[in-house]
Amino acid sequence: MKKLLIVRHAKSSWDDITLRDFDRPLNKRGIRDVPDMGKRLAARGIQPDLIISSPANRAIITARGIACEIGYDIELIQEQPQLYHASTYTITDVISEVSNDIETLMIFGHNPGFTDLIGRVSDLNLYNLPTCAVCGVEFDFTAWKEIQNRRGRKFYYDYPKSTSGSGY
Image 1 (tube, rainbow, N blue to C red):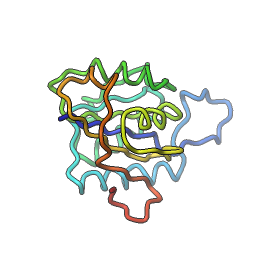
Image 2: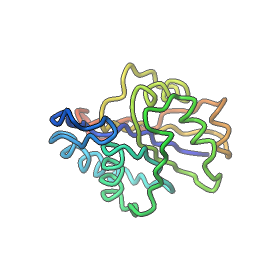
Image 3: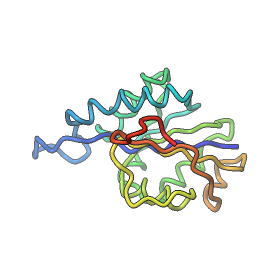
């Protein structure tokens, strides 16, 4: 059984209009939400074997912040340029290349691709994956390449404004 944790980057800042989209940092809310979401994941005992992130500033900052909270070495985070504003098909291509030794994979990136991905690979129907939200999907397969044509079951979903604060 494989587990995939899909994490949208935290809320980003639009204060400096001269910055390229790729370089935008987190805003105050994003900076606050990252450790909170990381603590929620840690409380649930969620520990990925591998983290892959878009290299965009807001995504990699989110990945590093959550990694610190869950005890994952930030030096082991793999940056994958293809995840920057990727389509669902590109995202599943990236996932399908992951070693089958990895049981739990966490990916960080962007909408609309991540919302679309959840609809394609899980039983959760979302209109929009909020910033810094985490969706966990488990699959009854042993090879990541099977994500291309298989669906899984949502086992976790949480976002910063959630009233439960612990996922469901």
